[in-house]
Amino acid sequence: MFENIHVMTQLLQKTCIAAWPVVAVFMFFSFLIVILFGCIIFILEQGTFTVNDDYPQGAFLRLALNHHDYEISPFVSIGTSFYWVIVTGATVGYGDLVPTSYAGRALASLTCIFGILGLF
Image (cartoon, rainbow, N blue to C red; front, side, top):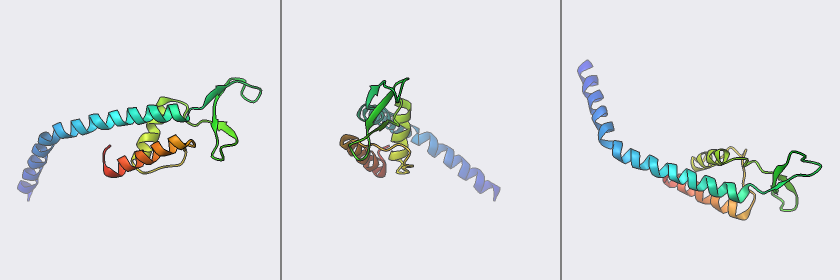
């Protein structure tokens, strides 16, 4: 019985070593997609920086879901946008970061499709 485990362990090790170049290329392109989509969603959803009586320190405001009111954008950094791409691409979609612009929603749809197809 222990001979079979040793053989299976060696087989798994050889398989991982043989597959490493393909895995590395996949990870590289996944990394590029996360960076590209993260930067695009940050640009689309960051809003405009506003300093007024309600926000004396300043805040990025964007149109809310009703497209009449303004709200503080949850996309406060590129890193947060990368998180959004990974969660949306994995089709988890927690709902804590939601694009409200039409272009942002289109990118969210594309991100979900890429995730479902396994492109990242």
